[in-house]
Image (tube, rainbow, N blue to C red):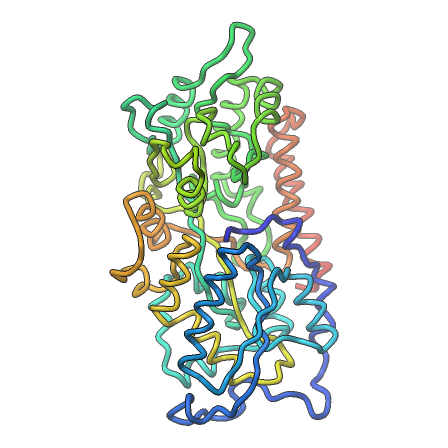
Amino acid sequence: MRFVPLAVAGVTALALTACTAGAPKNAPPTLGAQQPSASASASLPPTTLELWHGFSTEAELKAFTDVVAGFKTKFPQITVKLRKGVQDENITQAIRSGKVPDVAASFTTDNVAQWCKTGAFQDLTQVIKQDGIDLSVIPQVARDYTEYNGVRCMMPLLTDAYGFYYNKGLMKGEQPPKTLSELTALAKKLTVRDPDGTIKVAGFIPSFTYYENTPAHMAPMVGAKWLNPDGTSAIGTDPAWKTLLKWQKDLVDWYGFANLEKFRKGLGDEWSADHPFFKGKVAMVIDGEWRTAMIANDSKAKSLDYGTAPMPVADDKPDLHGGGFTQGTVIGVPKGAKNPQAAWELVKYLTTETDSLVTLANALRNVPTTKAAAESPTLVKDERFQTFLDIFNHPKTVTLPASINSVFNQESFAQFLEAWEKGTVKDLDAGLAGVDKRINDRLKLSGS
């Protein structure tokens, strides 16, 4: 599992406005409407739950099926039917039509704000309180990306943490950089070119269009903020963004934009055995914890001598080092679920039971979202994977702030960044102010 691309995750705010309609007569019960008995296992009647999720590969499906089987052991009277490969747009359409699953999971958090705001997913606050669940067992950053404006309509189910990978063979004894200036120096030292400037090996590719180099993933390197407290865009006023963009553009210009683009476009697919990091074509990359499993499972790449570390940070912000970016799978009970209390028991099992989380994390090689699971002796980990456990639990690790226009905000900024690195933006301040205006205009149209 990894954070899905924006093009797949996107759901517009207007698509969800229908979710706010009043409840019809004979509507299914809502969560928290009835106090559960002391023994939920004994009190819940026999029923069948439908769970929609995005897992699709054979390994993912087996792992998820095995974990759900554990729920059946605890609640033998409840049968769970799984529907695989579900995307956010499928969930939203189902909620609008009234034909919803009892439980739904998403690989992205981009629509959590809209789902919580409109009531598309039910508020879990009351049942969490009723069941005495201590949410402090989940790091604050994961709690942040599963709620909006005090409404918790989701729970975290595994997460992705982003850090730094480096090829030890190409590094030749060099230590991974801790600051942006160290990264620049090492990237230049490790780059190999032909006499005509053609790049043969890149120390580091600074382009925002390269694989995992999204602004969201790189923002923690400088502590850049997306939003002001009132929900408006902070991109044009937070000086940290200018620090990141100027550093990035200087390194792009050192390579030469045309040379860098020629090299980047000739690289192998990110999800294949031809990944340039596997091939020794790029010495250092930003990536998620799941890449460790991809390397281990690739017959040619598994012998790669590499290390992992937190991402380098701004030279004047050394306290940021050790943190990074995180975002993960979320799961909840949609509006109109026929069996909300049983559905909540399934959500609770999948997101708070240590054995369940560890089993799934071991199979998918994602970071578990509770402290107990991360510290479990049965969690399979080595020093490379430990890096990402540490990043996820670091106090400086951040996520995208909840916004009803999350996809639009990211796409608007990404479009500007493409022009910026090409060199067609002549006034950085004016350009960033333009990004703010587009985001804030959209916010007004959304009625927020």
